[in-house]
Length: 376
Image 1 (tube, rainbow, N blue to C red):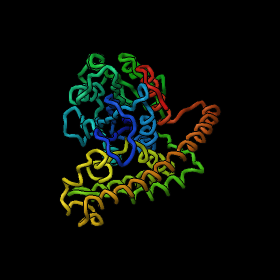
Image 2 (cartoon, rainbow, N blue to C red):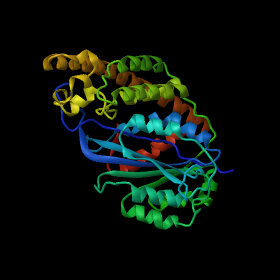
Image 3 (cartoon, rainbow, N blue to C red):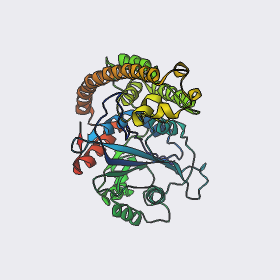
Image 4 (cartoon, rainbow, N blue to C red):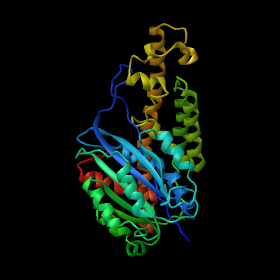
C-alpha cells in the first residue's frame, strides 16, 4: 500500500524593516533561509501527517536559533503535497503555498492536509518546486527542499537525476526522508536523490506516534501564552479573523499534546512570529505612522476617539505587557530545553533511535553549519 509524506514544516516570519521606539528589535539581516516542504499525501500517510503536526513547532524553534555572524536570517516556507488522487493536476502535484513567513498560515495548511490514493512522482514535485518558486540567488542564503515518501524515488516519466542537477545549479539542496527501513530507501534511490545535491538522507517509522517529553515547564509556559494572547490588538477588515486563527492554531497544537503547545508558545515569543498585517503592535514596529494612516473605525475599540498620544500610550502599555510575557516564556524555554536534552540523551542511548523532529533538526543544522551558520 502506498505510504508517503513528508514531515515538517517549518517555517516562518520575521520582524520588520523599520524600527520603532516601542521595543528593541533583534539583529535581523537580509539573508534568508528558504525551505520547500514536499508532502506525499497518498494513502496510509495519516501517521506521518500526525507526526508532522506534532513536531512542526520544534522545527520552527530550531530554525529560529540559526544565525550568520550574529545576525538572524529571514525564514520563508513553501508547502506542496503530491501523490493524492484529489489533486486535479495529471501529475498529482499541488502547491499549498509559495514562500511565506506566516507561521499561523503554515500551521493551518498542515492541519488541513488529508490522504488519498494516487501515484507519487518525486521528480515531478521537485521539478515543480524548483521552477515555480522564487528562490534567492544570494550565495550566503540557505535553500532547502525536504521530500518524504516510501515509493521508489524514480517513479514517473521525469529523470530525478536531471531534476536534481537543475536544483544544484540554483544551489538548492534536496533532502530525502524515506518512510521505512533505511536499506530499502537506499535500494529505492532515496539515498541517491539526496547524495546528488549533497543533501541528507534519513529514514523514519511513519507509523510511530510522537512521544513528547513532559517537562515541569510546559504548564506555566502555556498559561503565560494564554496571557500573552490578550496583548494582541487586531485592526482592519481582516484583523478579527486573523486573531481567531491564532487562537485556533493554539488549540490545534494543544490537541496534539501540552508539549506541542509549549513549543508553539515558545515560537510565538520570538522575533520570527510577526503579525504586522493584523496586530497593531507588530504593525507599529514595522511602520510607526500606522496610527495616522488608519481610520478610527479600523482601530480596536479601546483606541477609538483617542488622541495620537493616548493611542501611543495604550500601545506602549500593551507592548510592555507582551515583552514581559515573552521574557518569561523565553527564560522557561531555556530550562525546558536543558531538561529535554538530558531526557533525549538517555533515551537515544537506550534505544539508538531519534524521532522525526530530532532527525530533521539535525539535518537542517548540519547543512546550515556548512554555510557558516551557527545554532544558538
